[in-house]
Length: 209
Picture 1 (cartoon, rainbow, N blue to C red):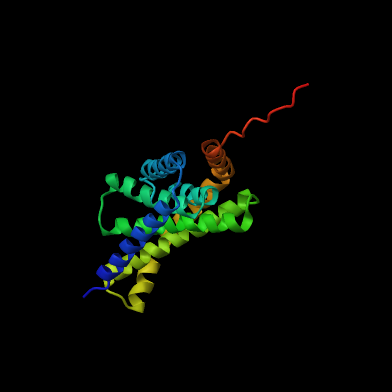
Picture 2: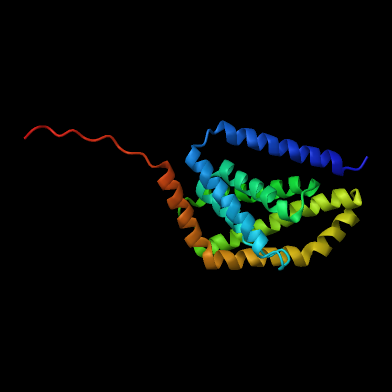
């Protein structure tokens, strides 16, 4: 039996567990709306630059979502963006792998946020987005390796070599988008979350004069 089938089953199970985890966090409805908006933005970015192979702001949006919103929302943005954009590109077994790959980019952003807090500068964001592009490419290379070749070290090296120009283009495009828009987008996401999670403090009663 090809290793692609059990590997894809494991990927789907991982996605189900992540969805269960996100549900367990009980996110407010306004944060859910923000996650949906960011996922739609990520999907539109992929569609808009479809003529340019592997260059799109999708990965940047997902990583910044994870950095600003946390691990579970970041993963959700990446997973939903893959499903939504594949309505145009076509659904298939690769969709589950793309959901996992972009979801992991959201987790990477959350990890960066946990380490740096609010100290992520423009170049730090650009470097992280470049790494996220390579992470996405690595996961997708594994899916191709298992599905098209059936395994083997030589086949894996061949897949990596053939996809290297596209993975590098993805990473460099991510760096360029992050340098141009990263800090502004991160600030916008943080402000949007603050507005949606804002609570009114109870009025302080003053003693009569």
